[in-house]
Image (tube, rainbow, N blue to C red; front, side, top):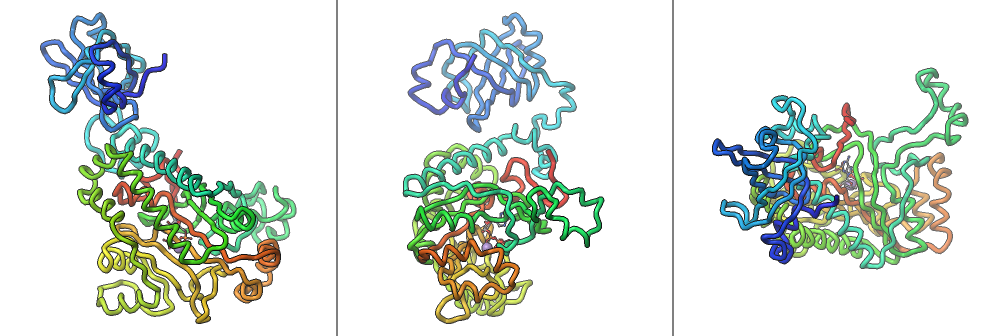
Length: 467
Ligand code: ATP
Ligand code: MN
């Protein structure tokens, strides 16, 4: 039988009041137990609906008490009993059990990999199917789900259409890192040199890859629907073992027509603020948990983001700021070089002490589709940088002028591959802009979890695609 979420008994005051001293049922997994010598068992039960568990008090009079007093962490149970005010501290209500049915026991409790004690995140990363049973990973999963829902709502409320761009693509020209190949050919059997000619025999009749971004496809939809976004998985075979990179991650990519870089930056700021506001209002239990357990400054920092406008710094000024800072950087600071993570962190953490939008980067370090500025040497690109992470958003105004777009595409091969993309400039071109927000970096920012591998259920990184 379906039972209500445990969260309702704990946090919904009206729901709780209505059921006080009434018979209720719950189902869930045991988080911890205390079996007293006097013959009472205190059992904390969690069903994933909240960080808090509900306390079940089971007296020795229950017919199966000899089984109940052997219950350990992880056992699944069904409880029926009376919801009563709790005498103990830490909870308002508890359940005086009338029946405790053990649904699934724990095989060899002494070897249960996540028995009740503190485990390191690194240890838990080895157990992606079980780590979700801990408070931290439950809280991350709830915030992830709630934020995804908010993002969809935000766009729907603002007149955007969700576009499902393909995961398999044949274009290898987005210029965003290394691609994973998609093929049904038996590559092991073929000589590498012979492969090129053989793509005709391959599943798609041409070389295909996992997408690194839905942007180019989203542009096609944007140039008919005006406001669109994608929200889906993207893949990068970059061999970077950092706490901010995954080989498979989710990206939110809005694309807006009749819009310039300023409109793009305004959308990025409004979206991030709407998400943070949502989390502060709707995920407070989980957010308090992260603030207590992971990063004491978290809630204060998120509240601070809502209070002021994002700082805006053109790249050229950012270089001056970094040079003047005399910061002890590992990588060189020079006009024309890309900003490294340490530089981004300096700008957002030390200089602005909050989110920063860096714009107008040198054209030579940015992709061909970014709009050339009048100075001829920078493009209308923007990155949003946040404390603790660095880049969380990368975006640009797109080059809508066909002749300039063509001059930015160096190779004939790419030019011919992009004939459809050039069509968009030939037939009713308009100024448009968009950006990519990394979903896991966003979750890392909102939860204070340092490592991006802990911000996605089943992380894929070089050397690891467990489960
Ligand atoms: P970085 O320089 O930090 O590697 P990027 O400039 O390659 O990122 P973009 O191509 O601009 O990233 O992608 C847009 C957004 O997607 C980034 O701002 C970031 O939030 C996210 N992102 C990019 N690469 C990854 C990755 N490997 N894992 C997780 N998120 C990523
Ligand atoms: Mn970027």
